[in-house]
Image 1 (tube, rainbow, N blue to C red):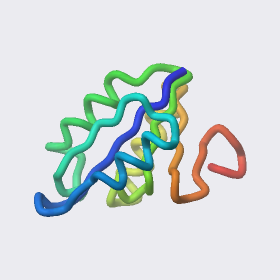
Image 2 (tube, rainbow, N blue to C red):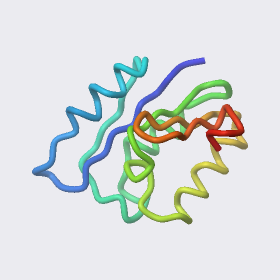
Image 3 (tube, rainbow, N blue to C red):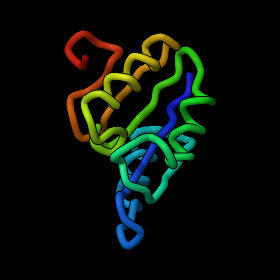
Image 4 (cartoon, rainbow, N blue to C red):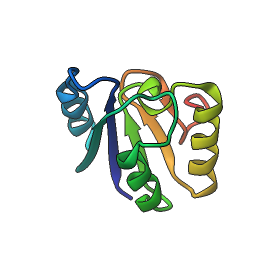
Length: 104
């Protein structure tokens, strides 16, 4: 049961250092980060690597859900896929932790 972090910024001139630090502070040993728009999942290779690699019992950690998805539909798809695979989702800056009923 590992914690995997995902950080994303939308433009090349932005920095994801603060996100990476927060994810490491949350216990993530592996953090994948990318500079790419969140309007669609296409082109988000680091996210796809994590989604392909993550296993049942693992947790995907983000600082905020808008770093994971920019639309409700994309977020629903990702959360459904994680749930189907037995993976939980946690946000460090929001009360989201799909291990508990309150966090869902």
